[in-house]
Image (cartoon, rainbow, N blue to C red; front, side, top):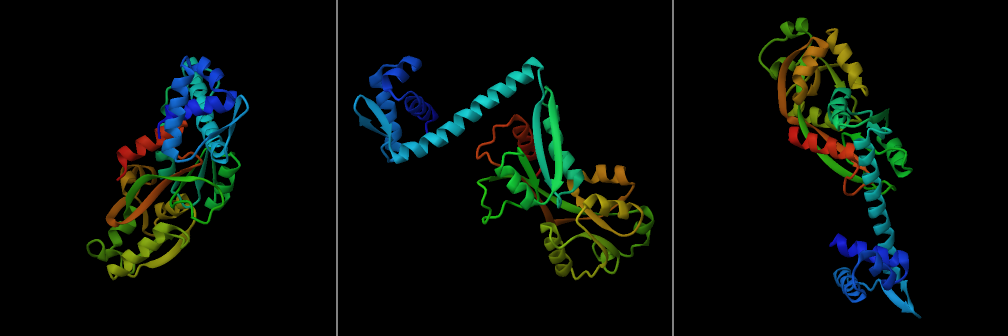
Length: 296
C-alpha cells in the first residue's frame, strides 16, 4: 500500500473536502483527487460518495479511516517520544509483561537493549501469565509482552506475534554434581537428578521428546514455573538444569555452575507480542533488532 495515498485520503476525510485538504498539502484538487482514485483502485472499493458540495465516507471509507487514524496517530506519538529523547526531557515509559515461563536471564538479555537508546527510559516490568498479559495489552496497559510461545488464535484481543528468534538449550550443574555424572553427554544424564520446567512450558514438551529420542530417563527431582528458582536449586547441587545456550557464560558466572552439554535439537522460542502490527515504539524496535542480530 502507498502510505502517501493513505495520508491524502486521511486528510480529505478529516477536512471533509478535497479543496481544503489540497490547500494543506499544497496540491491541486485535481492531483489530490487522482491520488485518492489510485488508492480506491488498489483497495478495490470506493471510499467517498458525493453529498451536495461535500464528500461522505462509504462503509469501506469509514473502515479505512479508522485504520489510517491509528497509523498516523502512532506516527505522531513516535515523533513526540523521539523529541523527548533528543531534548533529554521526561523519560519514555516502557511497560513490559514477562510471561512466567520465560527465563529471567533471557528476559533481561532481551529487554536490556531498550535501556541503551541514548535517552531517558522509565522501564516497568511485570511478571504473570500470558493470558493475563494478553488482556492487559488489549486495555493498552502494556506496551509489550515477552513470551515463550505465540499468542493463541483463540485470543479475543487483536495483537500480533513478532518472532524474536530461537535459542538452543544447554545443561548445567554444580561442580560437585558434574564430577559425579558418569559417562559422556548425553548418556550421563540417564538416572541423573534433574530439575525441569513444568509441563505448561513449551520447552518442557521439546525436552521430554529429546529425552525419549535419546533413550534417557532422568530422575526428575523438581519441576518449576520460575526458572530463577530452578537455577537456585541447581546452584546448590540439587540437580542438573537447563538454560539458554546463548547465555552459557552468564549462567556459569552468575550461579557458579558448569556446562554439562548442549542439546541443539531442544530450542526455546522467544516472541514479542504487541498491539502493533508494524513495530514503532523505539524500545520495542531496539529489542527486536538486537534479538534478531544475536538469536537464530
